[in-house]
Length: 107
Length: 423
Ligand code: FES
Ligand SMILES: [Fe+2]
Image 1 (spheres, rainbow over the protein chains, first blue to last red):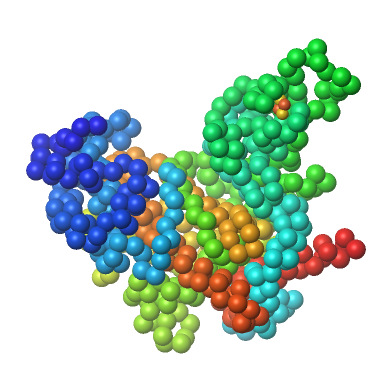
Image 2 (tube, chains in turn green, brown):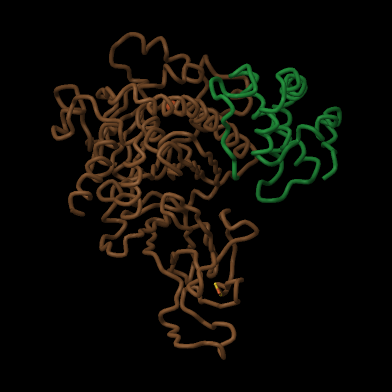
């Protein structure tokens, strides 16, 4: 898939390659293998655009496959969710007091 | 739904008083530590009872199959849809000379797919989806050979409301529905098959399967262990008084099985909501401001008929947990891999989203639940390691921990009775 985003989000295209991760388990691995500084750069860029991104996606019929650019945007939102719990709740990449344990997400 | 509660706290104020045979003192924890006990548990419990191994949606058409690698049973199970209404289970073995029948690339990794025949790669023998031998290769070589004696070994298999169960005890005469008993009757009618949006997680944890089940059988630890996620409730819990946010609405024991019902309010914004929750308009308990459920709940759910009902969690003997919440239902299955380790499978079944907004909201709920489970995981591993030290021999279990008392007593009594019968 290319790294394009819908026109209104063009300025975020530089995030796509690293942070638009479709697979749920890959997203979680990205979170636990990133530093807080790395995640905050993504979070600070993406979070303020979250509301507009959700509204943009919601124009599309859920039963139809998204165009590539909108799918990239959706995946950035998914990663924002994964990363937000680290940034806003735990203030560290992993769940507090969870050592090295993670769950494998199958789907 | 009738407003008459099915379940009420005894006048005395203690749930345990409703079950005089349960005991009230400390309980032995040997069943979580002893390797010898674990072997008995495998023999008498896991190899003799109905076990939930997956939803029927995994077998959408005739010829669909999946395998389960279940160390506790010392076998691999092959589950196949043989017809519209017929699902069969087998030991995953070729009766010719014992090759593992269905696997891809690695014989110890579970697999799934669709096939018209069961084909053994070792010498090319073919079996029908019902396990009978269709054709050995090189029939000219056969000696004294009876095809009827050469079938893929069948295992009892039954489907209850889309949940596929197997039972390794070939003498078993009880149906799944009878085995699950009154609790199952009470949840009949729940629209399981409409909950087709699935999110599945799995982990091998270094603790006995019962230790993990115990962690999900009480909410008393919420404000302490989950101070991060239940933060607001921690102060209340310190009051040393009944607390509607952490005490269950009700506990019920029925034969081998048990359940608790728990408080909850419609998911909505609170002073503690995180920015991501406000953005997505959802939280751990599901989407905010959801319309109240239109369909009436089956009679066994919300048994205290509480206005502030959140979820019900049923622990079916031995290792199958079924949780109903406003988001849908979740299953936990616990598969021992040894006396001090097990694989936990957490599968969430939600109503399919109809909009991208709904899908994104589910993603936050699921991500939250993932993290809450992890908040329990490592502490439980630490607990197991310390139990193994032998420094303590008993758990001191209180009234809010009644399900834990019941699980251990049930398992211990079951094993003791089976051992007695053996002699
Ligand atoms: S072992 Fe299967 S065909 Fe020989
Ligand atoms: Fe917990």
